Length: 118
Image (cartoon, rainbow, N blue to C red; front, side, top):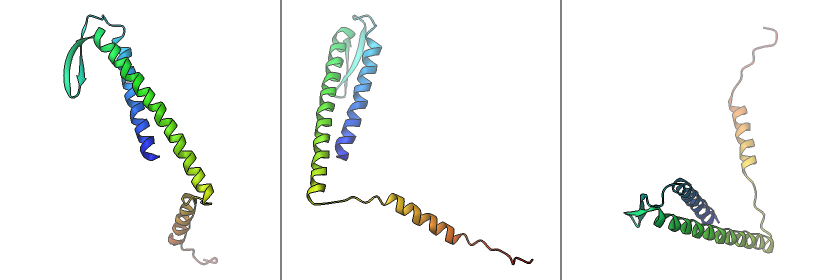
C-alpha cells in the first residue's frame, strides 16, 4: 500500500507539471518554437505539435492515477478482510510511548527541596 501511495503522489506531481506546461504554452503562437525532452533528448518542435502530445500525456497520467486509486481501495479492503478473518487488532503504541517518556523525564529531573523550616 505504501508503494501505491508513493506512486500516486509521484504521478500527481507529474500531472501538475503537465498542467503548468499546458497553461504556459496554450496562449502562445502555435507556430512558435519550443523544446521538448523525449527520452533524454531535447527535440525542437512547434507549440502546435507539442501541445496535443502534452495534453495526451496528462490524460494518460490521470487514467493511471485513477487505476492506482482503485488498486489502493482493493488493497485496503483486502487488508480489512484479512484483519477481520484472523481477528487481528493493530495497537497504537505512539500514545503509550509518549506517556512512558514523560514519566521518565519527570523521574530523572531530580528536583531538590530544602527543609520546610529553613
